[in-house]
Length: 208
Image (cartoon, rainbow, N blue to C red):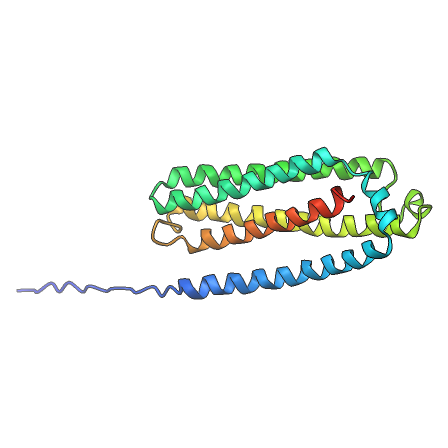
C-alpha cells in the first residue's frame, strides 16, 4: 500500500512597486539636472548674444519644429492610453497604442534626420567653414542646437527601446492589469522626453 503525498509549494514573488516608482522619479530628477544645466548655459549665451541668436534661429524650419511638437504630444497621449488599456485588462489595445507610440517616435526622428541633413547640406554644422565664418553668437547657437537636440534625440531612441521591451513584456504576460509598474515607469520616462522638447522648441525655433 502506497501513499501519495501532494506537496504544495507556494512561491511568493517580492514586488516593490513603490520602490520602483521612487527609483524612476529619482532617475528622472537626474535627467532634469542634466538638461537644466544646459538650459542655464543657453540662457547665459542668449543674454550675451541676443541679436545673433535671433538671426540664427531664423535659419531653422519652424514648420518642422511645430510638426514634431505635435507628434511628441500625441505620442504622450498614446502612451497614457496604453497604460489605461492594460489597467482595464485590454492587452491587445495596450499593445496597439504602445506600437503607435513607437511609430510616432520614429516619425519624429525621421523629421529630425531630414532637418539636420538640410543643415549639413548648407554647411551649417559644428566645425564647418560656413559656420566658422559667422559671428560667435551664430556659432554658439548652432553648437547648442546640435548638442541639445542631439542629446534629446538619443533619449527618444532610448525611449523607443524601452517601449519595445514593454511590448514584449505585455505580449508575454509579464506586464498585466495588476503588474504594470514597468509600463508606467516607461510612460514617465517618455513624458519627460516630451517635456524636454516642449522647452527646446521655443528656445530654438521661436526666438523673438
